[in-house]
Length: 326
Image 1 (cartoon, one colour):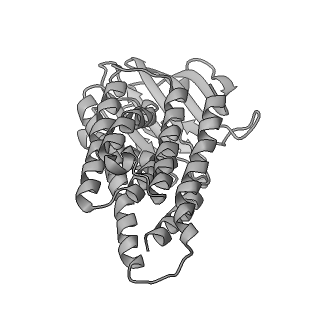
Image 2 (cartoon, rainbow, N blue to C red; image 1 turned 60 degrees about the vertical axis):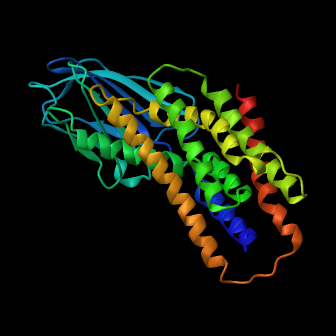
Image 3 (cartoon, one colour; image 1 turned 180 degrees about the horizontal axis):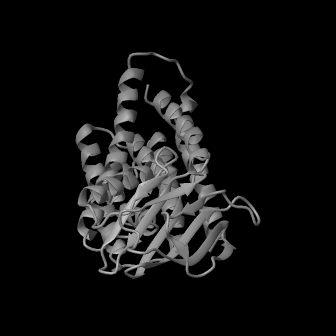
């Protein structure tokens, strides 16, 4: 029954995440009571092509400097300055063209006093109102959603969790394994987000992929009657590799940044979002397993090896691809 679950989950995950949807990013830094520096980043679509998304400021806003555009790493960026009598507080900023896409926009507005407003725009809500003061509730909502989306869009993190589910037997061992993974990645996520630890993203991403290869190989060893360290102590492997996965999660936080005055709550709710995504995935997997147990589907013996080989081959491709990108 379990192998039917694994084959189904792997096929579902592969199709679900086949197309990456990168968010756009808008950053506003207040430089005076009425002036702001603007940074606008839009996903590219090939050489000198970009998504047709444009920032529309409230009525009465004027450009102080002309936009300076550049294209690098398949992303289009613009920098310029705007001003508005009385400032932007209370005004509505809209992203023209967003309703016709599947792209989200992360927005960060930093005020003169260091406080910040962070929000997320979607095709259904392409505009927002600039607040006079940051809202703790808005920060909590935004960072929770960011955490959920980051983990559910991260097929490499989910494949690692799936591999641990395959090799872990027993409810208590599963609880210990998931708890160890949660604690370890929370430690490095916090350390990286606060600037205490800095490791370049390419090596981190390569090690994350390598962690999946390692656990996939351990599953194959277990199927052949050899009990490796992951089969004997899955919580230890989850904790060790979870440290690197936490650095990967921090990358999802770097684009939005941490709002001054709300750093602890932003970190907390982003972590809550990540864990919510984890348990949603685990819950779906376990629920599906309970349903599959009611259906007896005869499968050949070699079918047991399909999930670990598929997971390992995918992850090995990522290892090579990410090392080549160093």
